[in-house]
Image (cartoon, rainbow, N blue to C red; front, side):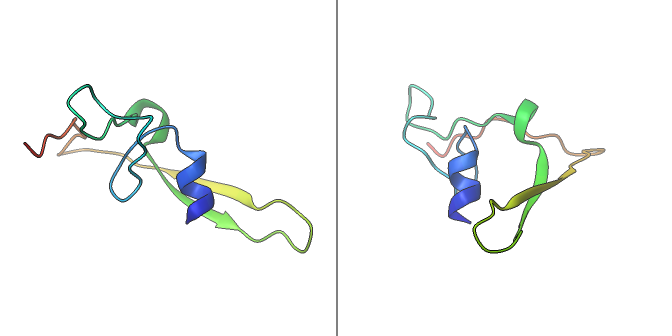
Length: 69
């Protein structure tokens, strides 16, 4: 989970990063580059984990920038 949070250059859900926020302090999403489900696969000892991605397809509801203010 931590590897995935560090890999993403955005704030989304539980992955809030101070360097990726709006001027109002809200989470700054990057749906163009991160609209996928991620699963990191263990590749064995002393090997880097492998990122497996499955794209998210939005047919009815589309992601938008949120504001909690």
